[in-house]
Image (cartoon, rainbow, N blue to C red):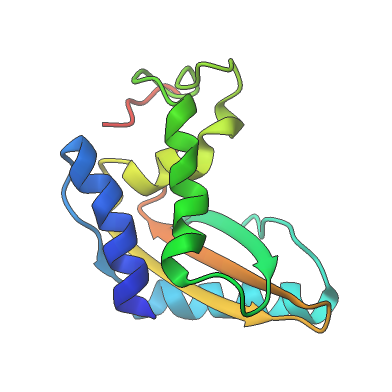
Length: 141
């Protein structure tokens, strides 16, 4: 799982010429705690964790590969325009590219992700990033 998720992230980073991410077991552990909580409560919301970036994905359990989950973030690339955050979306709303920009944020060096299946038939993927991206007034690359 970790290698597949890391490879999927780094494929997007390679496309824009930023260094690859390294896997962090610590970030993965933090992600697992939040994924388990979300699944146990049937929720889908950001944790508000300080000092770490966070991407969330949810889909029908047993249907999606880890690569497809990460592609859910990467598909936002179609709305991305290079610039200073938050002015990075051709829709005028940075949230339309926020998962993608976190994945390719140049200053982010580590990622750790985890999944949890809920009783609601949904798998939740939580990815944590360090240092976090999507910083107001900073360039994505």
